[in-house]
Figure 1 (cartoon, rainbow, N blue to C red):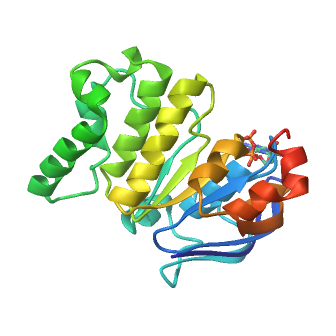
Figure 2: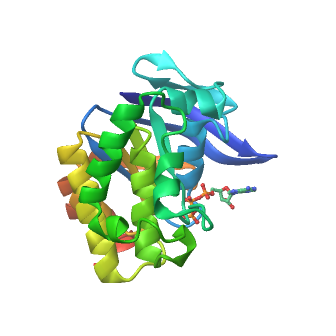
Length: 235
Ligand code: ATP
């Protein structure tokens, strides 16, 4: 579904990605793990067109998407949930969800998806008339994910969904990620510093270090890998 082929992405003269290649097949959850500053977010932003790669190529369902404007990439079915949630704090939960469907014209299906998501996220149904900014951190993360799903993504890009949340809340979010993949059949590329949890929901994973992929394997294999255990799982 997604193929990233040797991309080099820059901030000014800083080469944040120094030849990153990875693949995500339809139906998979693939995780990208790595330390702070390794280039995980930059990889997602390169896919979305926010930090377009200077060299290399990105293909989505066989078509090149590098060089397309971000809104055209969204229109193809790639939706990102950015780090730090970034919901609209003044808008109600319902309005936030409606914003997720702004590129869609199919009004009846939007209504069905909204009802569907409110049953997947009962806490959002309870809080539907509250401004997004009054929700707890975990609820806002749920809202950010649900809003992205309102765009009916084929590929969902999740950036650090666990960031700043209590362990119990994080567990609930990861259960939801698994559910979205299995029930909604959404393909997911998940960026996480919490490698332990990420590798529990992912089918495969990549380790990113200083802008380069240093390891790629099935999730079980990565969990058993001595280097991963020492550097990322704290075992
Ligand atoms: P984190 O978990 O801290 O977000 P990350 O693995 O997602 O880490 P990136 O945010 O992709 O890492 O950062 C990769 C490199 O690019 C780092 O060296 C970082 O300092 C640099 N970088 C990121 N954003 C910018 C920016 N806006 N301007 C300049 N350098 C940046």
